[in-house]
Amino acid sequence: MTEPLTTPTGIEFLRTPDDRFADLSEFPFEPSYVEVDGFRMGYVDAGPADGPVLLLLHGEPTWSYLYRRMIPPLVDAGFRCVAPDLIGFGRSDKPVERSAYSYAGHVAWLIGFLDAIALPPATLFAQDWGGLIGLRAAAENPDRFDRIAIGNTGLPVGRSLGDGFDAWLHASQTMEFMDVGRMLQRATQARELTDAEMDGYRAPFPDETFMAGARQFPALVPITPDHGGVAENLAAWDVLDRWEKPLLTLWCPDDPVLGRLHHEFIERVPGAAGQPHREFSPGGHFIQDDRGEDVAAALIDWLS
Image (cartoon, one colour):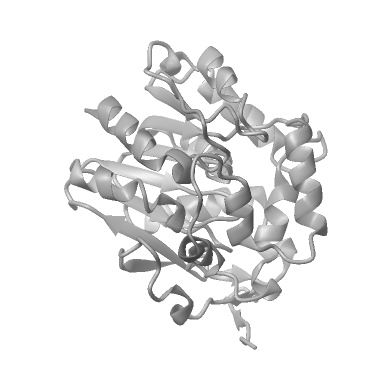
């Protein structure tokens, strides 16, 4: 059993052994690491150092491995791709107690990461919790982002996201063990994941003790007025309602959880007007797995 480590402020965390990430399928990228708030945070930094920057944010319960089908064509097109593993996921450290995770904490960790690596102004692409966190970071630090692209995400303000999310929330809190590989397969509609790919998603979580963040994330989504993050998301929407920089939606509308939420961004955000928004079908919640090459091609066309 892996023994917990402790941050200078006394938070216990686990670090997934490196051998769990050996021989990852279709993911040859060497990891980089930086310290954020006492935790080691892993990330991929691929492509030309002086190329235009794309910040690629994953969500629940994935990690930067989710971008294995998008990073190669983006790098070939001359972009620098930076894909961090959120605290609690991937190669990043994983606080042991669920109480260590909060929506505000994740936003602060992301901003700390951007500061730590001195990331220049970038284009954001974010999906799932990557969008909940990334859109907050952009609204609170607009000078950091030249453009925003989002796929199958949202920015909830204390109201239900619908039956699809409610079913996932219940399942995430009651299932005996999160088999992340099988979960990703069930959420993928356009292709079959290989056994090796499913193992890639399982790699960060040797056992349940590593999964506090994965368990807690769904419960943090602000779908009631009492959830933390409602006031901050309302403030973020106030910024987005005046956001003139380009905002693009790349969506799989067949996603039973968030497949309809792109319309709100298109209708409300000024910078979304006239953009080449795309819908991809078939495709499920994890658009990067279902339609990764198509999403990368759409980003390349948009950014060129």
